[in-house]
Amino acid sequence: MGQLMAQTLDAVDAAIARESGRAFAFLRRLVAAESVVGKEAQAQSVVAEELARLGFDVTHVSVPDSIANEPGAGVPQQSYAERPVVVGRRPGTGRSLLLNGHVDTVPPGPVEQWSSDPFEPVERDGWLVGRGAGDMKGGFAMATLAIGALLDAAPEALAGPLAFVSVIEEECTGNGALAAAEAGVLADAVLLPEPTGLELLLAGIGILWFQLAVDGAAVHAHQAGSGVNAVELALPLLSSLRTLEAEVNSGDGRYALNIGTFHGGDWQSSVPGSATIGVRMGFPADWTVEQAEARVTAAVEQAAASHAWLAEHPPRVAFNGFRAEGYSIAHDAPLVQAVAEAHRDVLGVDPGVMPGTATTDARYYVNRYRTPAVCYGPRVRNMHGVDEAVELGSIVTGARVLARFLARWLGGDR
Ligand SMILES: [Zn+2]
Image (cartoon, rainbow, N blue to C red; front, top):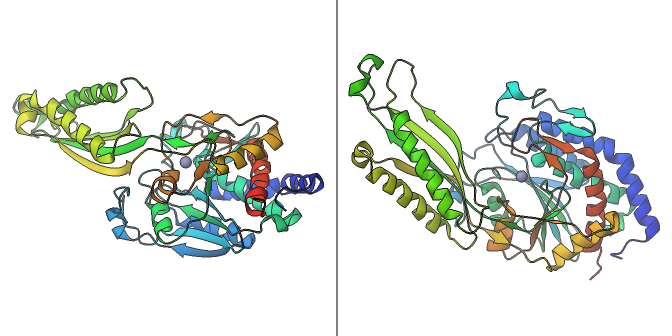
């Protein structure tokens, strides 16, 4: 076994085509179940139901608050009570595989800029539009479509143990995947159907989240001269962050520093007494998280030192989310080659390799558990933006690739 016969492959492809409508319906339910950080429960039950339908033994793993103490953990965003990770397992013998998907999405952004409600998925020209449709609920649909078709048409191909983990907080800490792995949800290899446009994603850069808080002196606007405006104090800090970004990117332009949030003041006729800036910073894979943190702290201290008020009232730096080190897996790793071969079978060409400019939960498996992990999934547009969408056809193509890969990896062919 392992290499499915051409006839069986035809039957698997036919099952994928036949079942694609059901997979898209699952995807719609999943997108409609809004799952920004802290609100993942409904989406997790949609996933659990689908895994159970496919014959997985479904359990929950809770994320302990102590996860924050693990090396590589992010800074928790809020209590983990009632926010479990969902795990589905199918027993088997031989080489094992874990599929990892994150059910959390980023917030929708300015809803009035969307052409439709971000949580009421709409199909347009072969694309499904909705927050999370691309990143990465479409990957859940691709994976379950492939598994369902194999169960239909070639169940013997799923001989090895197969698990599916549906995690939380991939978009801010990674603590869901880390907690599941610490609880033993691991395998010989991991595939994450993240939206890679049917390309291989083999690496991630370092990512650090931090928040700067600056204090001014609040007074009534009519005596503004005697106050110190915290919003205006934040402006030189913003430019110092751009200088830091340029330094981090000397020689390589992949490490974006994003000023993601800005809050200051609470009344138009008051001089604002405080402001906060929320930042995501990319950094090179050969830096430790501690090195990245030290660079941030030094940059802020330097900016404050040359400013009369800030020198006396230094801005506070809090590391408040991702503390992700970079990772990479070799292109010639057997896992990567097996996915590439399956891709070639379906598309006739080698899959492209995406440059890593962000991070994924794959870093834990690769760095901490020495387990190969690769991302391969559907084609998307406007990820994290307005009118995020997944190309439905790429879910079907991706499922055909994934089914072939699963048969090779789990089917006993060595
Ligand atoms: Zn993602």
